Length: 143
Figure 1 (cartoon, helix red, strand yellow):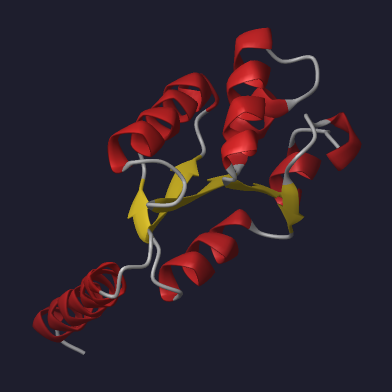
Figure 2 (cartoon, one colour):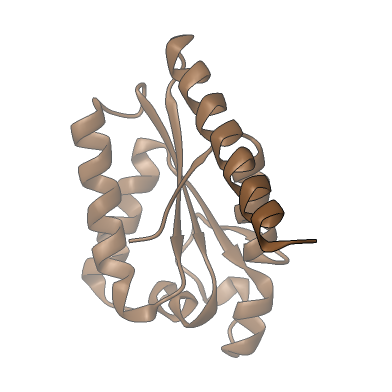
């Protein structure tokens, strides 16, 4: 297959996802967004972005937000992680956001689900969950 064909196919797929999200917003449903977090040092930044997203969008009734965490970032959500991260995470849970964490990354970081702050849904592969959410019309953000 030629590069031109691959690029054209990728652009058509992106246009389809964008159109799906626009159609959903036009129907009056909440915007759906998935944040992707893989970098340990960006955990607090991403949680702050999600909080700002809720506020700027008009709250949980206007936007549904998911977070998918994998790679070294899983360590940021261990029970012994920073108090500020734990507090931000708990506040977002009260707003109804959907956090997912990768079981493969947990094993790679020698962590178990019981080592985490409560609230995560553990999925076998974070990248698969990201793809599923995008397929379902979630807009993808990776700060």
